[in-house]
Length: 432
Ligand code: URA
Image (cartoon, rainbow, N blue to C red; front, top):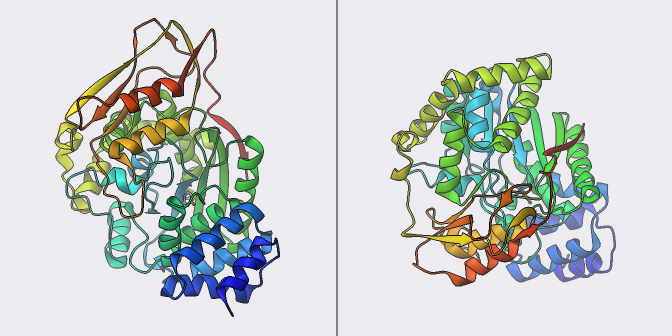
């Protein structure tokens, strides 16, 4: 079999066979297929799509490219959540300790930044000492004792996804339903979870910009989950503006801590509670959503979710004192104000451009292997539906340089001021 023939077959819109897909995934994982051929194949998939059968075979090949965790040693039903990626999406950080504080077992395998979106692992690494590369034994031990652990795809778990994810990030091949769904589901199935709550983003900060495309992605993800026999539900949620106010690694950890302190932005809190409630249903801790939500609200109010976060940070080698002193995380050298050029109401945001602005400051990778600066990013002061006066603060840029006119221009271009607008609906619909 020759890789060039398989690239050409997909380029010309043919359905690939299991043997062809296995050949590609195996060859790329082993290093016999080079990045340039893999990039061409990924781009062919981007343009030609894949059938449900191809997506299922691709997921299976990626899932079996390495180890599959056996979480049977952890007592109880294991539940997890995964987002398809957005800007300011820090939900996993308050959610993991919150559901663990409510008694759920949450083995969470997370990713790094991808395209214009941030990654949970990059954010957690803003916490001094925090180890996101747990061994399988450490992962199982921590979920058993504490109830949650957030780690990268441990060691040899779905190694194909690790390599393909990094390549997609820098070759313009992220926004493809077969690639997103196989990436997410190979990791999640390899992690051995019994239940999965998916947060499928829709809007201009998501990979799927329209509701129709996001629904298509949600259906592909749910179909793979059903085939694998796990409990699965997908929530379509808004990404027409960033979640919360903070974009950037340490800044988003600080905002997550606010949520765990029973404060924080309303949208981050609401989504955390909603996704968490679905996880508690899957874990059979609550029978209905209102009961599940009440349990979670109590865990925020009584401080046990915050205490669980400290426990989790300590268990993963991090400095838990950042919870009380967030300035112990990396701090940018300069803050740069972005002022409203006119009065009105914020009516639109180019959300993906705000993600790119944070990336350009150093908060994400522009090419494979770039080192992330955890200190930089943006804090918005206005969101869609908010009134703004001429000259009022729209956003603050956290940068290493005293002036970044390029980023100021990007942020100004990304926040549109009109005459009136209402805040977008956060949760669109549920697919199961
Ligand atoms: N999250 C993933 O894990 N993979 C993707 O491709 C997109 C979001």
